[in-house]
Image 1 (cartoon, rainbow, N blue to C red):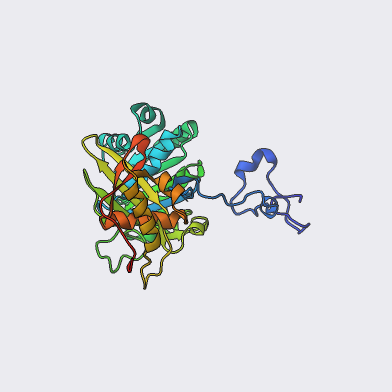
Image 2: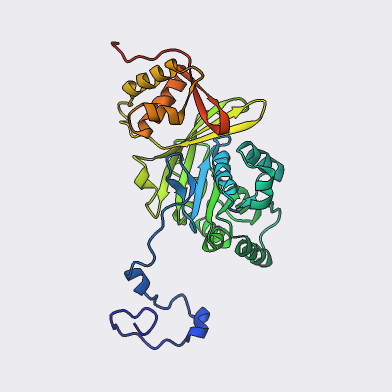
Length: 362
């Protein structure tokens, strides 16, 4: 291998650039395939926004999107990704085109972040004018300095409108991606865009409002969030997180179908705390909904017999079965009023008996 792109002694014209002039080389020059052929650059698994069972939904250095209707809990999902990083001592960049800092800080506190966590590890921007060349250079220098692992762009519709870009134009969608999301991703963090869906559910498809290139141009994964149970103060909200695209393909390894995760938010009053579960999907026949009645009865009997309630760890230790199936059994028992779930010490979920569940015929 004597020149960039020359492998197995295949002929190439002389390279006009020396090592000290490598930055001047055109992107049209052949790429050295040696590292790829040697397996030196294997696609990494996603590492940001982890589900309760371990697998994550966002890739470092890739551009992603979460889209949903208003109050679909899509911003809460993005903020849960932020809270996971911040409480682990990693930095998050949050570029907010829709809201104000006070809202973001209040929600992060509700999710368990302390003022010290937020002050040390959140870089918050609220742009009100288009991004200039100088602005972008300063922002990328800041990213180089602070090394965030996650960059959230909240409000793609508002951001494109601010820059005079057409939501329905593929050229403008490509221009937006090249303007901010891709340069941020190239600097290292997982980039997550928060977007809207069309009002019509029939014509919505699998992605956000606007041009098709908003989906095609993503280098990571695209998700849509749909509300199953509305969330509010003092309420337990549930949202389904569906995967519409996974370019690297490492998220779908852990998804039995289109459902990537199920988001549960529990608002505790008067403290204002929000407890979060990002549960893994459970594979079940869509034509004949699966009900793990055997596990439901096992869990119900355990909770009945335990004064003061049982933690999730306690249930998993006492009931034999896959964690995903046990989680779904617990979900059905709660939804149907057989148990209630409260927050215990250190954020643990404590399961209390309401009424007994028995399989049919018993």
